[in-house]
Amino acid sequence: MGRGQRVNWERVIATVLNGLAPVVPLFVLLALFIIVVSGTIPGRGPGWRQRRDRWRGFKYGARDVVMSRAGHRCEGAAFLVWGRCPEPATDADHVFPWLRGGPTVPSNGQALCRGHNKHKGVMRPPWWYLLTLEHRRRSYFPPGVDVRVMARPGRS
Ligand SMILES: [Zn+2]
Image 1: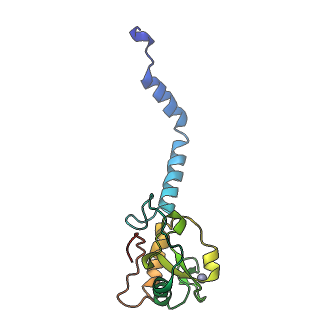
Image 2 (image 1 turned 90 degrees about the vertical axis):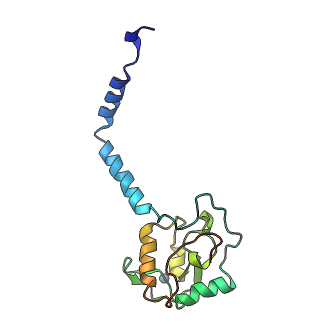
Image 3 (image 1 turned 45 degrees about the vertical axis):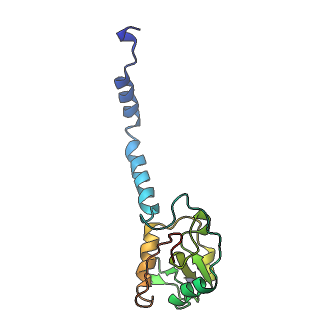
């Protein structure tokens, strides 16, 4: 094959890039927005390949820990994310959903009212959910109790 018959990749790439150029900023912005809004905090929560905990329900001691450190009141947000739901807690719920490998341990638990539990999604909680929950917790968790959602399997 002669030199002249080679595909001019530089030109092909330039043409493709030129064609895409007008929409690239839009896609980049959209992708960044999705990453920023839905990203979770590194080091928190189960790994992507974490197997489901054998136990789905918080029982006995674990349930007591989750409910009592919240004062048996819902830990859900009110007034967007700044206030705290006034309802009594009815359920010990997984912050990182059990279906997504969230372990059934107190550091992955939150006390929720029926309404908040019902409207909870099955997605991994984004960073702003964790930070606002932990921010609220500082005002009602007993002294010395870690407010962080760790949700690492095998840890309490
Ligand atoms: Zn609630």
